[in-house]
Amino acid sequence: MTPWNDAEENAQLAHAALERGEWDAAIEHFDQALSVDPDRLAWRFEKGVALDAVQRFDDAVQEFEQVFERVSDDLDVTLRLGVGLIRTGQAKRAIQVLERAAELDPDSLESYEYRIVAFGQLGDLEQAELMFYMAQQLEPDSPRGFDHMAHCLAIHGDLDRAVHCWERCLALDPEHSDVQISLGRIHWHLGRLPAARIAFREYLAANPHDAEARQDLGAILLEMNRPREAERELRRAVLEDAGLGAVWLMLGELAFRRGDLDEAQTHYTHARDADTTLPAVALGLARVAVEREDREEARRWLQLELAVEGQTIEQTLEMARLLDELGLPHAVLEMLTPLVSGQDDLLMDTPSAFCRALVLRAGALVELDEVEAAERELRLARRLDPTGPAVLPLMRLLLETERWSRALVVAQSALRRVEADDAVHTEVQALADALEAGWRQAWREHRRAKRGAWLRR
Image 1 (cartoon, helix red, strand yellow):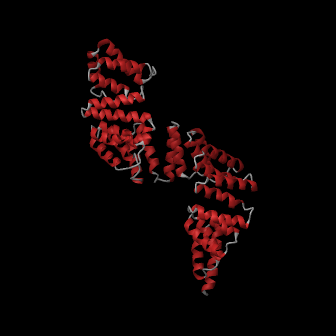
Image 2 (tube, one colour):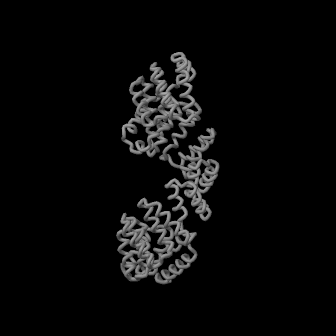
């Protein structure tokens, strides 16, 4: 058999594999056929289709480009190349190719709908909306047009209009690819948790093996304070993909909250095995060690956590709290000083977290006998939040330094603002009553009862 006959036979085998959806086999046969006859453009195009199917987009674009160079008046080739260029982030080139598609066929709906995406990637919302308008003239009820416009609007932060477009897309085609999960993530971002939950559940009903989507649903349920439902979804997620470190981390948090330290440690360990760079995993293991009163182990894990980047503000504050509990005031100050000195805009945008950071710093300063500096931190925190976490520590600091009348003023001011059933109200009221009744002796008895933990809530 001649090489040319071999090439034809491989091409036939490739076509049969394409019909069966056996993409890798098709690619292999096309490679063998093209090694003999590299100028067979139909084979090269079909190889590009197979590469596209297995998401080897860069390789697919190379094949489509070679065909386009020789046959630039074929609409199917032109559209395939344009879409491939979008998928590989080559938006400018994609627009040029799709403009050529519109020249070949002015009624080509795809040439306009995919340019919506391309202009969106370039940040040109005005041109994206123009392409959407022109597509609407050809087909006003195209689900793909609404889907592409929704993605573009979402990228540019116009989330309400994005939701409207996706809802319109689903009304036209309830099974349109991945719209439910896109809609769910937008609702989640906007804080519309019940709507996000519904969208994710509908998506997972059709895509039950999508572990990352199930992970997101678990996180949404946690935000909705539905821990049992969340745990069920998270356990299903790791059954699908045991390498999802973030899922193991959330399972560890759930176990820790219910006091199951052994299970929490197991889950945190799985998370660390999956991804050693994941924030808060070593922190979780440190918390377990603190609960078990293993201070050396807790310090070891905190040192490992400090080497990881990307912690949230809440996780950073929890690290500082544990360092304080372990008697490491210098480490607390080193961690929190950049935050409270305005070097972290996120913390400045969350006043409650900022106040908690000030209170933790004050505790460290007291441990270092810098009482005046600690008082300044607490007074600033109280000014920012008169009923927040600084009230009790400030009172205790004033009492510790025997400024009885000033402590009473702080207590009375807080009582006017704090709800009567609030835990802070109860303790502040007790201190105020003790001050009015017995002043110094009352405080000394109160301090003995607290066994020295006078600055910590």
